[in-house]
Length: 349
Image (tube, rainbow, N blue to C red; front, side, top):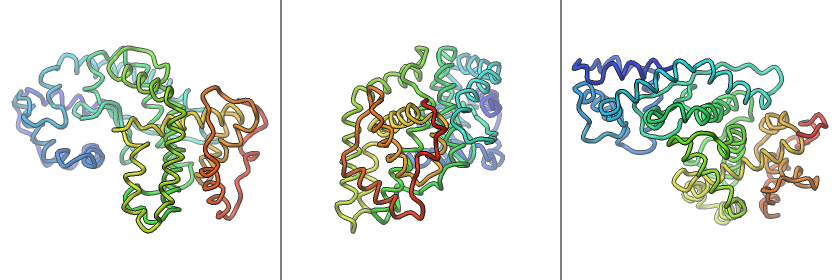
């Protein structure tokens, strides 16, 4: 969906007054602001509308958290990017569907929407309120070179929307986590969700030299070079969560951020990606959605089981016994034990 992007491009430098009431009622804008506002007060609806009004007068906002400057200073680039995305809509959809199909439950159906934003601060995309958003300003300078990265990005985020339908119930956090067990549940859930989505939208060999493709490929290469240490980091985080149960609510957001926050390269995403690759290597692609339908400590246990077959991928590393003990104890508290044989047809991936 490029309609909002086209609308903003038409507004920019038009000299027209902004219909603020209509903008405030936009469900798309509400979803965007709901996501962006968690990163700071500057990402407010008021600042968005002010930036839009400045862009309509062909002025670059003095404070421009949503990057309206691109609509003023790079209009040709933005138009070319919007046109290219519109012309290749069917191809993007078909390629994403082909990537996702092996990793969904049998008879699973899904319909979703990808909204391309012409005013957004990040470089990549995000999922909010049932829709997935992609930032055009980051991609516009070399849109054709970003095609492969866009497909993988859309696949990653669309899989999150699918997970919300078939996976085990999501855990809320990291703020408000009050117990050690809920902290483990949230950490393991994010490891499983982000790891499987990163495996499906693997950026390690992404083609193209656009800004986003290059950034994503370099981040993946760097993270996989450090993968052994990132496994150790997860071990230390699990240990730290259990150290002081009385203060876990205050400490957990800081612990969690060390491996999942973008400021620290989201190191846990690549740990989870390797785990998902090893699970698929041992038990087949269909094991991925099956494991996701189980309580999330079973993602760690399925990975440990995959490592025990002595046919492992070169980059795979073991977790510490203490980490696996936490996962096993959490699994033992459930009504039904996890059985990996229920998630495989007996054929290797």
